[in-house]
Length: 543
Image 1 (cartoon, rainbow, N blue to C red):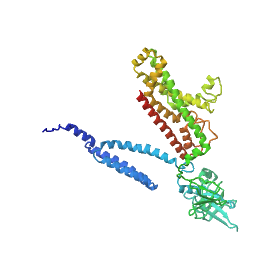
Image 2 (cartoon, one colour):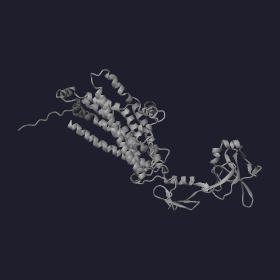
Image 3 (cartoon, helix red, strand yellow):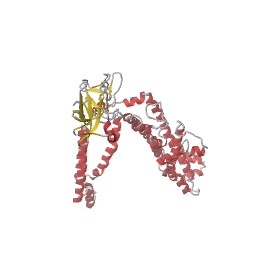
Image 4 (tube, rainbow, N blue to C red):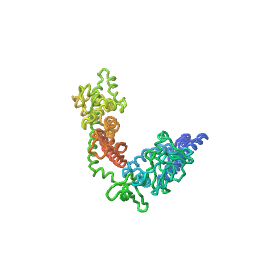
């Protein structure tokens, strides 16, 4: 019979255990540290509470609940002892959620809405805007003589002399947004227009001119109905009657144009639309499902430039990577020879374009390419006026040349480092075996280079695929494509086209369509990167 003995269980020394437990618990906080923590948590909680109140006021209860839960968890995590890693991770997770996850999610949501110019608010705001802006002069109504006066408090008023059909004259006064009230005048001018009354003094011509911006926006209503006719003046001497151009029926939810009786119904697409297909502007933001994606496919004015821009984007990104890599590798091979004198200075000269800020380089090259006084046309081509940035083909060549200038130093640096990491005895063995320089490059150096450089080439492709700054600063995406229904040029890539659609001030902004294109860019770059990195893994296995 054997007795099984268990060996002693290994444990950390007692002092080490105490230190580890203290680190995990966060140690025993001092009074000063506790006060500082409570003050900071109070400030954060106050800001969160303010945000919750705003969200509830906007009836956004989902986000209000999310913020409330996050606030409670945040306070609970920092007020309890222990769980030190969570306390370090929470700020980073919070900022990532706010500035990355939420931004990406919101952008994706916008792709399924009609958010843009004339569709940037809710329906109630759109109705109010239509009623306020839909005002017109009432045909057939008389024009009354008037004077601009100020009361004892210095506030502007209109003093209007009104004569009815029977010839009876009434003098009325009113301020901005107020209703005209009858008053007894104290003075008339030679034309029979009342110019003053008790407590009201007429402004001189110079005083009216000084306050003309205020005078032309003045509205004085004829009665207590806020949608009634009102008086405005074009010249501070005549009172003209205006009225609403549209009449809103809240029961039927329709807008009726007063002058011709046309009825506009809620189209379900964020606007009021007549049976003839006429839309009223502004509209409001609604969810439209896949409409933005359908427009990109079915609308020829969007589909054709989108296809052209996508092809040019791939061409630009691929050629940029290939040309910069080939030139960078060639220079790295040239200056990697240890026998070359001044090798260090040559390498410094090669990276100067990389050290110069990219946006400044774009501005400099834009001046060099200038058709009339650029250095390239004036000096190199003897005064020729070559349209480097205004011709559909030459502008693309110009962009590729500038990107080659900006990108080859980066490839030169990474390929130089990769070449120097190749064992010298390996190359010596190849030379002894009779391998030519081309065979050494093709069969040894290049495969070994691609193992370490391939991930960088993938990231370079992704960078050039979204190289907004070069396109925007050098050519602005031009020349403009006048056949397209969206704001796009012949040298635009996808990201610059998205920027123009979303933020161009010259044409209508369409955030929904721009977000749909952004999703397209995300899937293109993500898919290419995924398969490229898998290919990189294959290269590592083969190596």
